[in-house]
Length: 302
Image 1 (tube, rainbow, N blue to C red):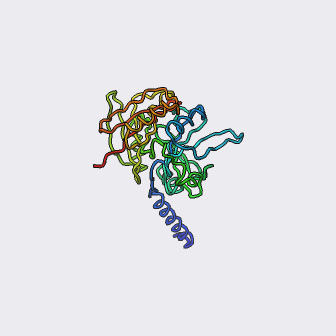
Image 2 (cartoon, rainbow, N blue to C red; image 1 turned 135 degrees about the horizontal axis):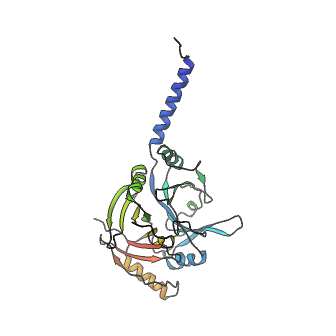
């Protein structure tokens, strides 16, 4: 009878224990804290700056350049933890939406967690030009989702407590909307794998349905806009949208109309105050490239 050498048995035990520990580590999902930023493509940085800065009242905190010194991206600050990225690049098939970024406290751990669940991820976590660590994945509808771990020495961290003027129309991105072709695959990805929790679902008069999913470790959420037929890329900015929270929509709209009257910005569309099914006031704006900006009234305490 052939006996297995003791050293081989010990080696196999070490490998089994290591595999078990790796599986235990990768089975625990790192926290997903909220929306870090939403990035959109813009055709003219000058026009987009005027819209987001002069009209909506935000401040630009930094710009990233290409090797030829032309500006590639401008960062618009919403609050100390959230911002918008305006990319001076041609849009992809997803219309003007470049990506939505989610905050985590462990980008490396999140990458391992997704690998264990058979989600395709890059070979490594990257350090961005702005100093934060990130990697990018695609959801079932081919939206790019960036996983970001903020660092205390990043460009944005250096602006904490700064660049938040009284002129800004909002101080929070409560959610972002993304077009979804079918609910099943999206729910499996966001709910079952990433741990999002369903807040609500419904449909509008035009049969447009939606599902709101809150991040597992915070209050921000994504709104899955269910489309029976995909919109052409040029029209997707109305469904792939950015929501900005305001205390009083009517007051915010009046403020914006005053800025138009005072020629701070030549906004070409009518701005209406609307009331949603849940009773919250809202208003819709379009940036120069057709990305919808929803102003949503702060939910009343119940």
